[in-house]
Amino acid sequence: MIAYGDRVDFCEEGTRVEILDAIRNWATSSGSTRQIFWLNDAAGTGKSTIAATIANEWLIDNRLAGRFFFSPNSRTTQTTKEFCRFVANDIARNQPSLADTIQDEIKSISSEQHVWFDIQLQRLIINPVGKLEGDIFIVVDALDNCVLNEERVGLLNSFVRHLPSVLHLKLLLTSRPVQDIADVLTSSPLVHGSDLQLFNVRNSHHPDVILYVEKRLMSISLEDRAMIIARSGGLFLYAATVCRMLERSRHRTDILKIISDVGVTDKLEQRMDTLYLSVLKQALIDRDAGDMMMSVLSMIIAAYQPLSSNTISQFLPGNIYVEDFVQDLGGVLKDGHPDRPIKVLHPTFREFILSNVDRANGFLLHSAQSAAEMAYASLQTYCMALFFTPPESPLFGGYRKRYRDRQPDIITSSIVEWEDHVVLGGHSTAIDQLIFSPDGSRLISTDLKGRLQLWDTETGGLVGRPFDDTFHGGSFDIRCTFSLTGDRFGFITWTKEMPPPFCDGMSYMDGNPK
Image 1 (cartoon, one colour):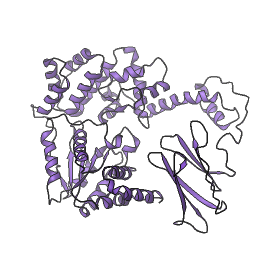
Image 2: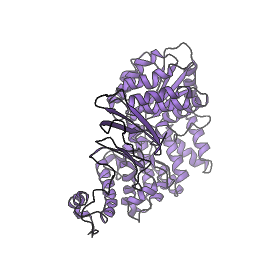
Image 3: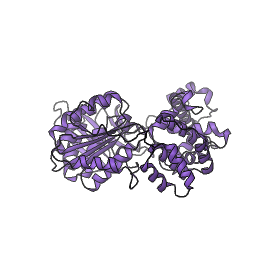
Image 4: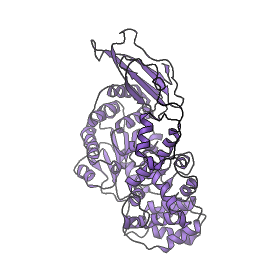
């Protein structure tokens, strides 16, 4: 799962020893009030890899409470909206003694209309962890990937406010040194580690990068390895991108030539921009395939959640070999398996390709245009559905009117309008709620009389039996929701004469009462 950093690589053995030891020493220091270790440096210096390595160590030692890795690859990990829930669920898994307490609190908060982040943090994380004994840790990686400044500041202020009440809870936090984060942390007496430096452009000796490249690229010549190390200038992201590119691409010789021919700069952003241009150029051996490659990248960048190669192939013309492009772009994309979601490996590539004409140098994507291309590709799917859609229905009329110039001529079936009972049958009054499960496989419908039905969205059939009130005679309200995993849903009912907290409830697993 992206939020837990499950796909983030660990540090290569023997690398990042100094910084890892610094974190370990901070973690084991007793009596210190510095409960936050802030690891901050420029993009591409290896912060996420370090965070994943330390989190794994603490998990093995049963000292990890929870973790959250912010990432632009998923809308969930670009905001703090689900932060407390995800971390709390992680705590429940890693510390089973707290599982019941946390799940009860999650249910309680879910039943409330709006709960502020600060209160969620206290009820779902701070209070439960306070019941544990011994030092326990939370890892928050890449906070700068949270898109809203006010959410970042709110998260930090809440931790600074509540951590002193639980002295055995410590927070490992990584980010770029952006101003709003620095403003909060540099003024707090809780913070340690803010003066550590992961990257020094003036240091010509880079033992960690040397060891990393030597281990990853043993199959290429010593001269080529030395060239890559020199070009990296000690920047881990550069070295890792080149290693992945050489391991995945079909054009190793071309890659080495492109990298050796480009100049070197001390500026980190320009160094990575030059490398990203090399990645894109080597993937474009066929110069006539530029539009095809950019179409694939548009789908990857614009997707609300990561898509697989096979899924993208369904949206694009059949002559675009998505998997080949993904393989050749392996230096910046993960992963290449046709059925697994493709993720942009580092935010700096997304920033580069969405930047401006001069910086992207012929490979610029416009976010609005990418979203439009995704919508247009999706429209092809709707066009296929229109063959079976009655011409008098609002769906048919709306799409035909709006996208007439992009659709083929359609001869529809003999059905003129939808029959009332075709969709969501079984309700005798107006539909009150429609709620999809997180993966879209289930749909809950409720009506004004309180009837609840669970549907399979693939087959259109009912799952289990409907719920009807037999005690209150149908004169009650009902509210329901799915769990985060989608395998359960819960609901509460109440009468106008006896509103909450009095309620009747039942939870379901796959449509069967539990």
